[in-house]
Image 1 (cartoon, rainbow, N blue to C red):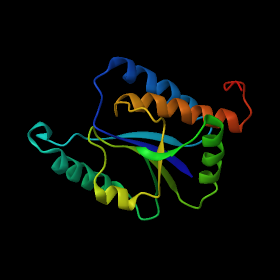
Image 2 (image 1 turned 135 degrees about the vertical axis):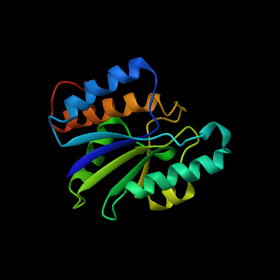
Image 3 (image 1 turned 90 degrees about the horizontal axis):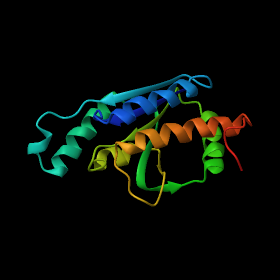
Amino acid sequence: MKIEFWMVGKTSFPYLNEGVPIYEKRITRYIPFQSQVIPDIKNAKNMPAAQLKEKEGQAILDKLNKEDFLILLDEKGKSFSSVAFAQQLDQYLLRSNKRLIFLIGGAFGFSEAVYARANQKISLSKMTFSHQMIRLFFVEQLYRAFSILRKEPYHNE
């Protein structure tokens, strides 16, 4: 299996552009891993939020394969502790899907079509974070999950 991490739109924050690759590199020691930015929609600033979500949703759905297992990072999703997320990740990896895709939506979230296609939703916190910040938080948690599964000293309990 391969894990892919998809994000709608690029970020202009230097600390995120520097921090995310640190964890991406660490994750590739455990499993094939790739991050992918779904390009920003042109003229997005001139669109109502609902229309923007629909256009972003179509771009996402166009990239998915039928056999992909899609997990949305969504504030309404199921919350896990780091250890519980590691255990859930272990269960995901037992699946026969070729790709496990974790997806961060745009600033307004996901279209109804993307919600309908998703296999699961997970939340990183009950707090709301920007879709830009979640990039760093998620790759760190994914790395932490692998270190927990391998009983490496990164996670202190």
